Length: 228
Image (cartoon, rainbow, N blue to C red; front, side, top):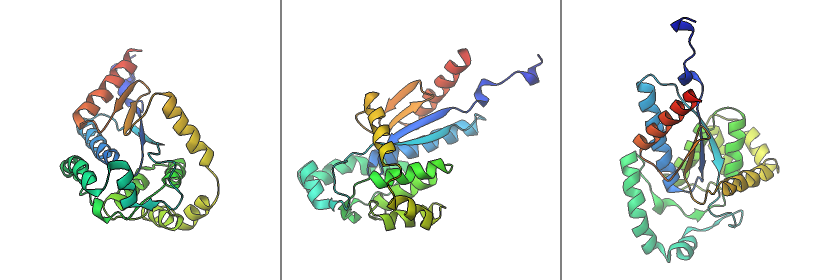
């Protein structure tokens, strides 16, 4: 077999599974780091990985219409002052990643079950990344309530989907069980926090890892796959 016909193991699509929640600021930072990592690989002629999104509800017991943000912060952090101190670190990380977090605009803490259903719906139709990005941006930069059907349908439209189709889906019960099953699988893998990256089903990385770490993990996965 000549050189031109030799298969290149790098040409096989590598899958990166991202477990996250749309109300997790570190997940948004992690998404930006992953984007930079993928761009670095592509600049060096390496193929683009396939990214798949998986749910992890940080607050699954919140009511469907959410709760006032102030009440949520009081219970979780002891109040907005303490929350502001904790958020200083993530705000700084966001600035470095190009995200202008505006936590003060968030009025209600949502239940994210329907947001995850929408992401799964979008993923079944192709690439869910635009939907994920729109949800993050709506919540963390615009203070929009990402737990309501009307708002989610509008955000789906912003991401390139038909708003009526998204609304019809969200009004149904389709996908609810699948979200629960996906979260149970994540727990069975020992995932207790997000973001969590699973690269080629081989390597697990917890937290908003720097882009360079993600690049090394992706390359290690490809080298391991080539050696198998």
